[in-house]
Image 1: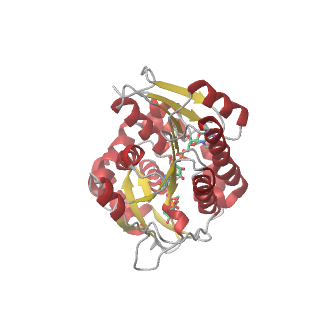
Image 2: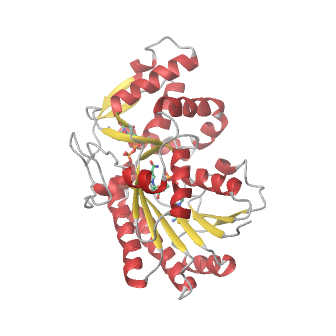
Image 3: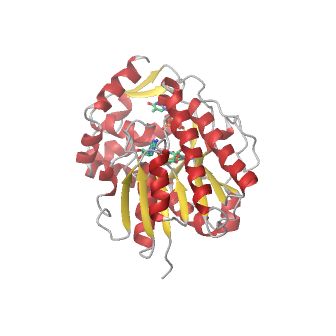
Length: 352
Ligand code: NAD
Ligand code: TYD
């Protein structure tokens, strides 16, 4: 059995928890160290089903704590890092950009420094895998797709901080020959998604018969990918990706926000036994997000051709599974939407 020690940062978050679960269950010979500061977005409940696994270790560490990073690298001597920890919500980045600079930029450089120092000259078998977003490429008009060659043009403090972190990762490859790989993925959805992002927020609001705040004209377009398919892509790139390369990951699945919201409403009405059209009545157009990118769409040809990856579920199936998960996990939903969440929600939507 192959053995490896891998540090996964942000493993208590949405995507990270799916990546940790996949690696812990698929690779019993690997030691998986989940490094996470447990911010508002990090939740160990996301990993309840695997937390007792003998190949899983949790370390509550902030990326800004360089002494702790030093200890982690000395203690575990990892073969690889899969870096997902980040501040990830565009609306929060508009309110407090510096939090995004600290975690996404400084935190990533701290992690790069720890890897560079500990791997030293013996780094040929190591890998620093940086998980990034398609938002670094900016906004598309009605046509075209983001490829790996599209120039960076971030517009929100979130995407600017992710773009900066991507640049640092490439700089460490060029300057110090640190073995790196980067993926830029489109919008994810699925179980354990924190209900401040569009899909889980609207599922939660429909359950509670609260207004569904659609920004602007609702004609913004996103390319949605089921989170488990993202985790599968990360596994493939980690094991088979070309060092120094970038891979775009996307769902081949574009939806205008308003059409997506109507689909969520229809599926929810059916599952909740409500009259068809009842949830759509909750749709409320609100003030737009400043700097709102009109359209994102990924050309995922490279990862498809080179590594044979493609999404495994249709959007209708993935969305149905996601809604079922939220309906069956009301305790989880209640847990993450109590306390500080209420304060966030009232503040964020009072301004609109
Ligand atoms: P998330 O907000 O759900 O989780 C982020 C995790 O990082 C949390 O567990 C949090 O506790 C941890 N964290 C935050 N700051 C930290 C710090 N200073 N030190 C240590 N841990 C810290 O995010 P997500 O949606 O799961 O996104 C994961 C990664 O994937 C991010 O890098 C994001 O940019 C990228 N990404 C997300 C999407 C998406 O649709 N969600 C799409 C493409 C790329
Ligand atoms: P979001 O889930 O925040 O992801 P991102 O901004 O990173 O793409 O938002 C997805 C889309 O939904 C985006 O165009 C903004 C829009 N949106 C709303 O219309 N209302 C909302 O309450 C939220 C959170 C998002």
